[in-house]
Image 1 (cartoon, helix red, strand yellow):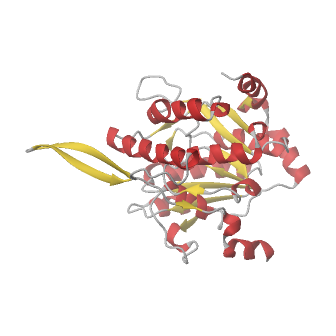
Image 2 (cartoon, rainbow, N blue to C red):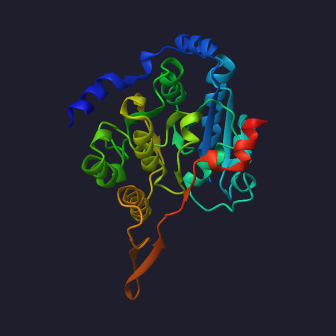
Length: 314
């Protein structure tokens, strides 16, 4: 590990207990910063309401740390929107945001569009499939942004068990993202959960970043933020244990392909790579190929969007 990364780990890796709530509230009052929490959601009826309820009760009603909770529904066919609204979130459908640009499927697409329907100086992203959710996931990662003006982006770090087996990272993290970062961006090798969906950042940073529309969004954002603001502006906070729904192997393969493509675009833009992934399924006739497109489209920095600029002027 680079000496710079060892120093960063000592200086920019914290625990949620390092910043008690009263300190966060005092910093929020002193700086006047506002906090938005965004949950991108697709068919998460079983979990989204509980997450919204926990954040609202603990971080809005009990202590005024969070100013708004926005769930962006990206086309759910279950009762995700109703569950989120009943729990107290503002629910917005992806396709109603910036209709001038037709939406495409993907998590990054939803996160990018969420900047247009939130107001917070600090934007905190939380996946909507978490089980046994703790509000510390939010307070932990917004804490450094409220208390340290030099910090621009904070990732959550946590244990991530697979069933009954303990683990530090997810399967795609360990097999794809961590090798890529260590080989090509070794200054980011200190992140425990580089692909984790729980992170917070200053709007002033997010609006200057391109957003890969699919699963590559977390990796792309981390790499681009490193180049834009430097390693010392990035941090991570230990929030405990993350439990969520796990995907099957083929879904993980598609995720890994998108992440690799995101990394490749940043290594050598313009070099041709076939943006497709062929996987195999057993049928009565043997193994049949199934080819899936790999996300390659990216949304530009939000400051390039006229509607966003006009909203800021207004």
